[in-house]
Amino acid sequence: MDLGLAGKVVCITGASGGIGRAIARVFAAEGASLVLHGHRNYEGLLVWLAAEAEAGRLPSARVLAVQADVTDPRAVESVLDAAVARFGRVDICLANAGVWPHDDVHLVDMDDERARKTLETNLLGSLWTARAFLRALRATGPRADGHGAALVFTGSTAAKFGERGHADYSTAKAGLYGLMRSLKNEIVALDPYGRVNIVEPGWTITEMSRRAIDDPSVVAKIVRTMPLHQIARADDIARVAAWLASPLAARHVSGECVTVAGGMEGRVLAEAEAISGTAVLARLGQ
Image 1 (tube, one colour):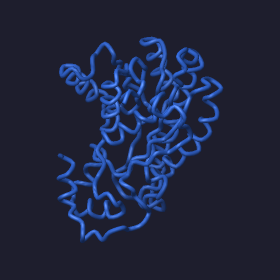
Image 2: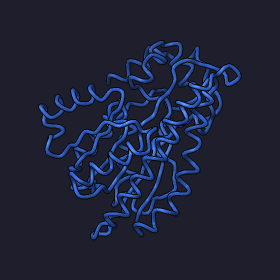
Image 3: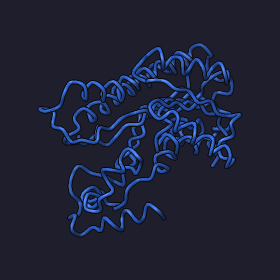
Image 4: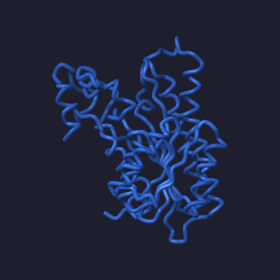
């Protein structure tokens, strides 16, 4: 299927992480030009980009790497400014940057620093990214071909079901619902065909989550809430994000949240003892 992404300029925040890199690969394969943002692992992003360019997957002529802290509004503005200076406009923005604290801490025991950092990165960082993208869209105007601009947030099933020990994270991701549903009504003032959506991953194998799900017994407990007893790969999320951003495949989809979590429900569907966590982990390599 032609997603209509060839020649589009795509900005991806958090491109140094597993889901961000997968999103970059999918859009590059569709022929898009990429603005890839990194922060704490920016050097790692550059190393990865060099390897991808050498392999012919991400031609350097179509890629701009930019470092910024998404909690700093001015820094986020500079990312979009650099994108417009390099490519002339930005058609699609993936507000993907985020953090997930590894330690389980109940809110009653959570310190101010952790709560603020999680909210500032995941929620305010997405808000600043969205604002910078919309300002760039206002400056350049909509595309002449009628392919509307697209803004896609990376959410989490923690927003839908909550996550014990991670109230800061679930609160930040839940805030994206209100942001998305407000912006879907605002973006059309700048582009009559502009759209805003959320891709909502469940448990996904990335560097950020690897430590938590390397234990087969933990994996068995996770997938017992899903009819599909498997963990998502980053590519599973990236393909849905690309579909949501497509001005052809999803041209009439706005204000929606697409969950990619194997049918996860907020209840136990199978006993952990009946699930082989080892087998679930083995499937990730298939």
